Image 1 (cartoon, rainbow, N blue to C red):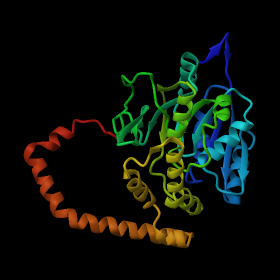
Image 2: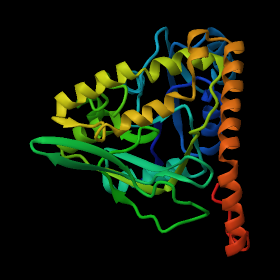
Image 3: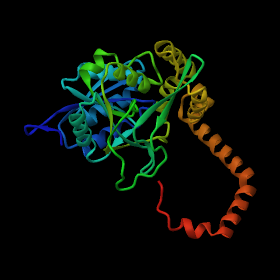
Image 4: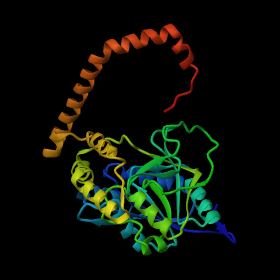
Length: 338
């Protein structure tokens, strides 16, 4: 535990909405259930429906401070608002689709105390056992005088069971899902640039690095990022705004001008954005109501069934081959990867 002469340092946990409102309640519940250290909690959320704001205030009003903005806020905007309101030296910046595990904050505080890092990131899972990232590197390649940046998530897709041999290590940047930061230099350097809808994690890493500040990964801190959270009716307009490709691309052009670096990963990140946007199809975007969302779900299920039908012959052949080579006997003894 981070102690100086027996004193446990208080931090401010700042929660912002990433691209949905619906995970907020569980996010806050998990913070209060799994955090032993003293903390203030500020939730900065823009554009939320009135009934959600009332429910959150009734449920957590005595334990959390809510700052509601009438307009949608990107992650940088919400985090800067929260940090300016914080009364502590350190803050945890967390998306509302992140759920913390016991011991998470003590481990991050220990790392910050030991390393003097301006930013500490935890292990981020995307299922109960599957690693989304355990530290981050920025890979840069050059074509002539043009630089192309590629984000790298260490140990992506690997299984994290009860423990591992992951080591505390420096990083080039930290995923925005969850970070412990030192507030004063972060605000002074404008590490969270409000012009960026995407690539803000790389931008902040470059800003801190240029200032000679250290960033570290802490393996004993573990959080779970709910990558497959369903989209509710209340989320439709916000999700559509957050992942509007025209706005995202404007941010990429801004990043390129700022750093003389293309951060679209040779254009591949555009394909990811299209896939991510496919969680919400055209019908509910045009008519954001429950009927349209249900129809969208049904269309998606029919599409999945059609794909499965045309894949059936290939699947049957693969199943036969697996039986022939003894795959079932082998896989039955392998622990679940979920």
